[in-house]
Image (cartoon, rainbow, N blue to C red; front, side, top):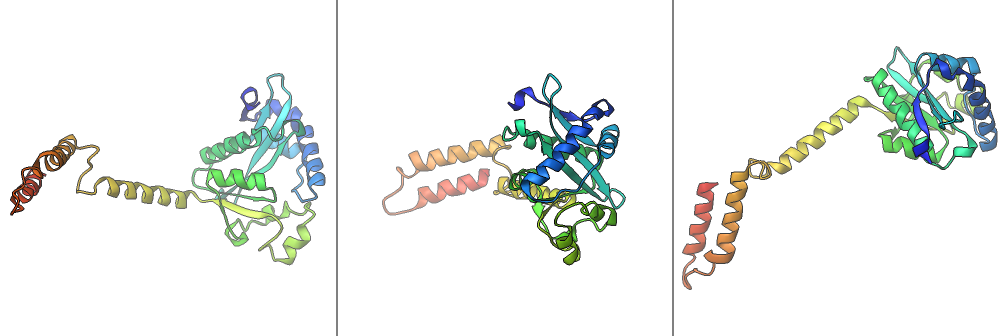
Length: 246
């Protein structure tokens, strides 16, 4: 199904889908009985014009799904918000493709920003986890008042405020590029250490590898057979010979 659906960065030419998108956002929130930050068609159109949104369409132009980007605290934090998929195309995998595309777009536009999200959906949590997000506490998210004002239209807003914006029904998830870079470097070092077990990499040093193979063949096939019944000289000589050439 997703093979025939185009998932791309939205443009100003897509503004006529804004009304459909915001209507579906509101209807979806009602069905789930959970909150969602309400957005106007004009706001969605602005995101399209700025190139800060991803849209999914069928080849004939039927709207399939949408998600947009918001930045906070002078681009220190970025949120991928408003993920919505048309009921006709749910459970097809398109939500995953939209999330991946908007995540890539966020990394391109804001390479140093922490990307975060608030969600009550298990499917979205799974997608976020696959992209590298980690569950975090609310105090690790942006402190920008404008972001939290966006929650005022949520049915759970009173719960959020009663917890001093430190907890709510939604699960907070965060992708930290600095932490991910550290993890990648640590993994690289571990792999390098494993490859250089004997002070060099057997995979990359053909001469060493060849000597190792010949030593094993000599010891296992010949060396042990010639061993004197009362001495260990052949074994010792084989080992000393190997160490010399190594």
